[in-house]
Length: 387
Ligand code: C2E
Ligand code: CA
Ligand code: CA
Image 1 (spheres, rainbow, N blue to C red):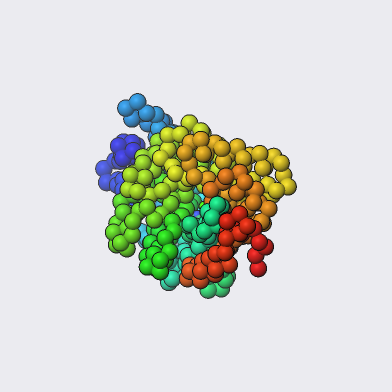
Image 2 (cartoon, rainbow, N blue to C red):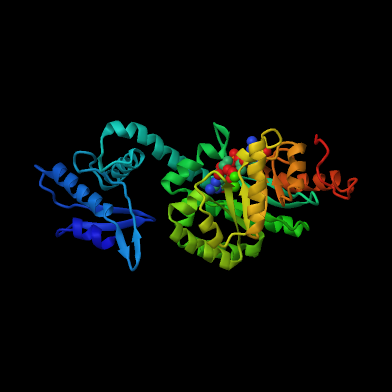
């Protein structure tokens, strides 16, 4: 790509640079004031075209895409920093519209300043400890024991209150900032695991990864360094990946997943059944667990089709040697149905909602007390209605 960018752009004095991650910048120097805008547009179009051609790497064909934003001195800014940030604003606009190169225009700035200010608010949130780690219990259906927890992110915003992940995760994914959030969640989970482990609780903590994380070839090393830093084993964590994240770039995702699995992390396919799941890939991936999406579980006690889907998914997963988790268990009937279908684990509001991580220990000991006495069949499952 560096070669393609240079061939298309570089004249004497031009500069092609990588800003970080998957962001590149091209500086066209000393343009003729009479044609600077036209010249910039022409170069951007050529670069855009350069990305449209597939790249052939040995026997692989790789599709690529990129979004381009342009800003031109002195029309759009009078100093380098502003020029760069306006090019960024134009780039985000191009990304949102998924069309060709976009030249900076103050009109798009109004919408994009929102994006940039949200981005700086998120950065601020990390630096000023506004992020919160919530944990939601995962229970074994046969014994009713707490066997794990899923880490779910919340943002304690100074004025907006507790912001749910759906209000900022998609944005973080779009801008690439999710990588920072993922490392934060991982580190916080590692810290929490130590606390729980020292208190005698041996559970596996699940962490959500997004497409951007899977495309980051350095992710396994970063996680490994955090394991060493916090003195925790990789086996203490299960990494949840959605089917669509894998399908975005199966080859690259596969490489990352193999390395993560090689380090000892458990891997789980999240929201199973909602994506364009390819069974061929499922067979090849080093996964340990399959999580049935809550849309099939929520009303499976009333909807026969949902119940059928859940049942065949459980059979499929077991046939492939995978553990099956059902999420979205909201009542005792569903719990019982899943147990009868030999589903392995359950997660849902019926047992426990996501809670601040420091409340988890308290909840877990309360749960153990409430469900310690063996039931009629020797199974201390949550058959009882909970209060
Ligand atoms: P998800 O990974 O599918 O997480 C499960 C979601 O289902 C959670 O929503 C949880 O509160 C909800 N849930 C659990 N049990 C029940 C139930 O019985 N009934 C119903 N109706 N819902 C239930 P939450 O915490 O709002 O998270 C939403 C999504 O945001 C997550 O979906 C995940 O995709 C994303 N997310 C949350 N935290 C992170 C994170 O740290 N990193 C990444 N990449 N994504 C995250
Ligand atoms: Ca998940
Ligand atoms: Ca899910």
